[in-house]
Image (cartoon, rainbow, N blue to C red; front, top):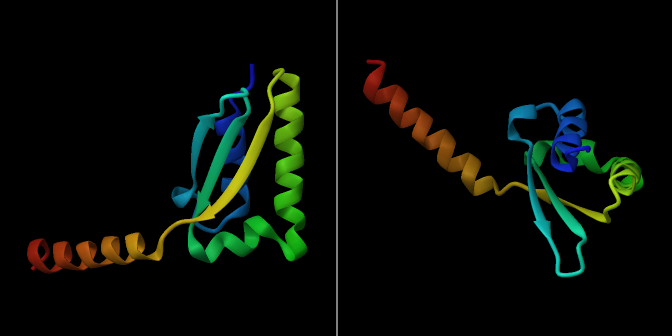
Length: 102
């Protein structure tokens, strides 16, 4: 059986510039539909969505075929990671560098 979350994450990592920032959250609705929430770095949103949404549409189609082979239904939501989290991580990195690398 195909792991739908890993399949989506692998496709997204192949497209983006920052593959470490790719995360996939999986939820199952009451009617059995698998909802996959793909999060990427803000700078990579354009690469995942594509011109006119073509890349996003292709990702969704591939995931629907993979889910159909497993006898499941799937929905893919693409979300941008919050810039605030990146800002906090950057500030923590600076503080760490100043304190420990003097």
